Length: 237
Image (cartoon, rainbow, N blue to C red):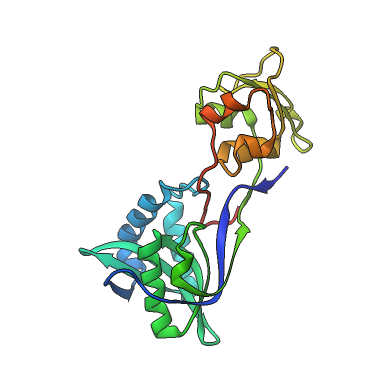
């Protein structure tokens, strides 16, 4: 199963009502500032479940934006990039392809764009401060994810949850079976039963155990190891 694992605040033809700080923003060359942009992305990504660890892919992604003649607006504080927006212009507005930065910083960068272009359309982090935006906004499901190998994913996450989980996967037969949360298959009776899609939503923190209804009996134990998280990604997958 491929189910949603992130959320976005979808903003359509919006403007920033006000910024809660004085700011300095500008358009910059992506090529000349790629290391600073990478640092901003890395810092931001640590606070959300579902963000892609890009590594060298970050440069590839930026070069793709350059090839499409997109612009990059940044907000700096004490000379350091705190937020950036990759965008293009279309019909009197900005179409934002990537918005990175915590709410107050990011909205100041978008305010800079609005003052130069008119309005913006973007998929923003779901915890963006709505009080600072005017226009059409709604929370939507973002990226979808499935599990290629249940054992590898459970072993990588090292949750130390003491329960066993029986996984059913209609797509990848090798994923079917009962696992401990260290990734090893086991002959022990299963404590909880989940589809592969439900398991990935639990592991990402897209839904809390109580929302997935995977086990009323063991829900208290599950909630010691898994909880709903702030899930967002700037990539489609």
